[in-house]
Every structure is written in C-alpha cells, then in structure tokens.
Image (cartoon, rainbow, N blue to C red):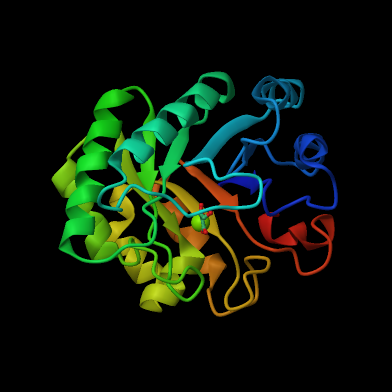
Length: 249
Ligand SMILES: O=C(O)C(=O)[C@H](O)CO
Ligand SMILES: [Mg+2]
C-alpha cells in the first residue's frame, strides 16, 4: 500500500485543529497536510507534529483570511505584486512548518494572458524559493467554478514552460475523475510529473472506497510503479472520521 497522509482541513474536524494532529497519529497516519494553516500559531502546529511524530506534507498558497477568500492569484494578470506578497507570507509560515510541498493556487482566470501570468509567477516563485518543492493541481470547475488550472494538458504545458526542478504536479484523483473520467489513464499520462497525490471517493467526495473510482486498482498501480510520495485523504467523512478509515488498511 502507498504511504497515507491525513488532510487535517477535511479529516478529524470533530476536533479543534490543534487536537487533530494527535488524532491522526493515533489513527495510524504518519503524515498530515493542512491546506491553509494561517489562523493558528505556526510554532504550536510544528510542536504538535514533532510530539506526534508526523511529517508535514503540504500547505497551500495564498493564505486566505479566516472567512475563506479567493483561491489564489498566480494566474491573474495585474495581481503579480499581490501574488509575491502572499508567497512571501507563505514562506514565513513554511520556515516554521517545514512542508514537503507548497501548492501554489492559480485563481479564477481564463485565456492566454492568464496562462502567461501563471508561468511568469511560477518562474519567479521557483527561483525565489529554490529549495522549496512547489506544486500545481488541476481542480475541476464543477467544484471550483472558473478555476484557471482545470486540465492536465494545461498543467503539463505550464510545467514545461516554467521548467524548474522544484515545480511539479499535484495529482488529485477525485478531480482527475471529474476532469477526464479516467484516473488510471490520467496517471499513466501525467503521473511521472507528480510528487503528491490526493484521494476521495466519487461522486460524493467521501472516503476513497466504493464509488466510481477503483482505488484498489489505482493504489496497486502506484505501488507497482514505486511511487514514493504521500497519498493524502482529502475527503469529507461520510459519518465520523475514525468510522471511515478502513480504506487505508
Ligand atoms: O480542492 C482541492 O482538491 C485542493 O487540494 C486544494 O488545495 C483546494 O483547497
Ligand atoms: Mg486536492
């Protein structure tokens, strides 16, 4: 089986954020991700990870405010200054939290100018933080209307244009199924560019088991290829988090 990670923005929500680290460790996870860890003291979160023996795999850029906020600026023409300020703020948190990867979100935009902006911003970010692994993730527009990066061909074009060793693909199987209808085929085409995987069932975005995506096949494929990254459960538990964890066993 692959190495599984708990997305603490989606899982263990029965508890306050600071208590989710211990709950994840007790449930058998060795790694966690927090999408927007900007509303709690970074050192407290870091302490929780150390005390519970957890690797911190992923956080997102930019930091939205406590009520949510736009899903990124990296592909929005005219907001390059905003992007850079947000990226620097993310890096300040990352210095403490030490995430394996930072997911740089594109935002709501469309067209060639947006793609060129995305490429330029990512080039800047990759050079600005050369030791930090960065990712981009195709997200389906049913769940995130208007999101710029919504298919794998565009992601591959952007990765090629940026051509930075520290920029890679984040492959979310739930989005892949909605975008292409073929998780294993999409992985076969683009998986060699991926450093991080996220999973959820389809269509409900609940546990990665029993829906339209055959995770037995997908996980076997990752194992057969020797995929060495983490596979994160990024889903809304159908009942309680603990009651739904059979998929990882
Ligand atoms: O929506 C997703 O699948 C993600 O992983 C993003 O980070 C959005 O928050
Ligand atoms: Mg995802």
